Image (cartoon, rainbow, N blue to C red; front, side):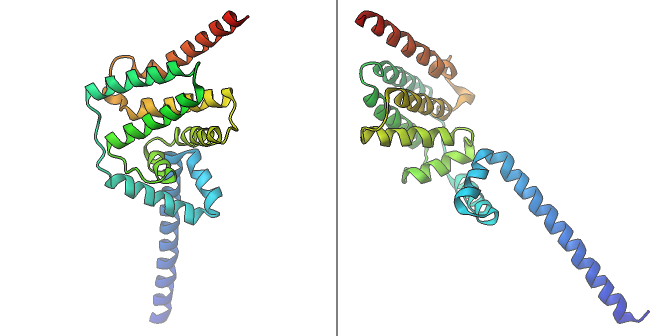
Length: 206
């Protein structure tokens, strides 16, 4: 067989091998993004209109997040925030709209203290999605209800969901690796307390 034929065969084989390798790398990268972002991966595809653009955006989020200089809260700051959250939840029965506003403010304050850039909401949600992909949709829902509340379009039950969603993210932002005792229970405990106070209030009005 002529030498040039062997050269062509070698080139074709190299191209095939390179294609297989590249395909495997893309599959591995896609799987890695799916595992890291969960439902946020599919949401980004739906919003961007294509897998390639979506994966580029998610990789950019990762890069931006890696460049952030996030810092843990001091134990004193965590304890203070826990008390402020309890006060906010306790406010819900008499002032649900005010409780939602304060819950949003507390989440933003914790983010600021942790070192997150406080750009517009969509950028904050994008930053949150890298480390807390299971909570970012709750954050969006809570924020959407808060905006609806400002327009007078949110029910009390909507507002309750908003505060609970804010609470789920709030607890995570306190940094669960080194938190005050029972901080991880504060959201669920206070939800039960709200339900109890609302029931008592209804009974008194009867």
